[in-house]
Length: 461
Ligand code: HEC
Ligand code: HEC
Image 1 (cartoon, rainbow, N blue to C red):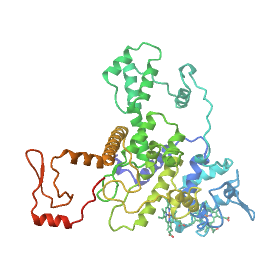
Image 2: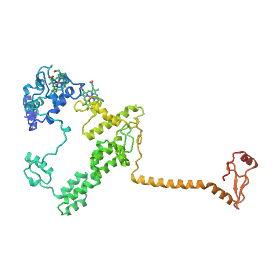
Image 3: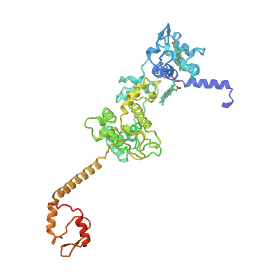
Image 4: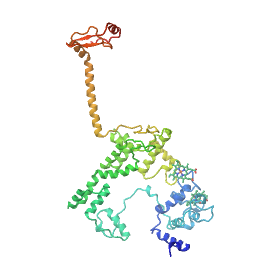
């Protein structure tokens, strides 16, 4: 029978069976993985961190709130689904009691309610959100083939294969291996010469040699830097309207160099956030702070500059928090966060750090908007230094000549034969150099009279 001719009931049964089969095999209900997302999605809007929206003075985002007992009513009674008000509210047929309230427009699915029931029945183990728990190094798992394990990570790989009842694949041949590791670490295939060198290297640590070479390579640094550049919203254009050009590539190169030098993460962080505030900050440390100028710049003539000056600060807060905390903070710009333990107050505390840059909200259409520093790369800086030294020495020569000028002029005067009798350094003097080297004032009587009445420059002595 073709699929579309099946009776509806049979099709529904088929769908139900498929849904049932598709449900993942689960070990225990895990609060972090299974329960918190449901509460966050359906309940935190009214029972979460935002006290201005909180209903029934009930928090379901904290342990105290979830296990609250009040007037003989337990929100969650561990091990006792039947005595848990939370579950009663989810199962209630009375619209005045149902949670979430029907007008909220979101209903829990039966499978979600069942998960909550299971969790309570299993003892309602609560966990702090994993993102706020410092990671701990787990012990190495025991595995089926300890000989296969060459380093601790292998043990985790094999433990997982064991769980799935799978055997490790045989080791790849050397050509495949160098191709994979080169693609992994640089994003590019190996050259034929690199393959040949690896095939010819019979030493026991030939593979380590390849890995070390790749880790030191510029290509590897580029591959690592790309992710950071994306996260840090790097662009050599301003992003609005015609997307005019600006120069951020000096900062890009700083990131690349940081990966190349394997700069420790704390320095990498400090220099980008506040390199200019370090004592005796170097040009590189100042360039690092370009991180904070990667935001877009609006050059539209009609914008309210103050509005966009605020937008840029918001951009810095959001990007800094997302990139370094792995948590988006943007929601509490306008109200306490609905799902994460972040307040609007904390948002503006962070905001204030970034709100002290003397910038103007309307960006310029082409080029970098103020404030900025000049950051010539080393070869340009060298040429600049050379030109500055040249200029300084030329200026010194001019100054020297200036000092000796009276003496030089006097000597020159003596050197010319037949000094004209009517010598003034003003316009109108008409001097003729005769063939025998003498000078002759060929001005007319009228012109001479005009010269005499004009201010004469004092004779140098
Ligand atoms: C749109 C807002 C809203 C949402 C969403 C919401 N609630 Fe409520 N909740 C209320 C209000 C209002 C009350 C107080 C009135 C009442 O008791 O019915 C309440 C009361 C409760 C109570 C009773 C507290 C007590 O003092 O005994 C529980 C338990 C509860 N909610 C659980 C939940 C759970 C679980 C969810 C998510 C599945 C949820 N609520 C989602 C608004 C909400
Ligand atoms: C630019 C300001 C702004 C940002 C950013 C913002 N919100 Fe809101 N949000 C509001 C305003 C204003 C309201 C209140 C609307 C109303 O009164 O109906 C609101 C209401 C809500 C509500 C409904 C709460 C209730 O009591 O009904 C939820 C949920 C919410 N926001 C979640 C979020 C989340 C999640 C984010 C981040 C992804 C976010 N908001 C970012 C301005 C913002």
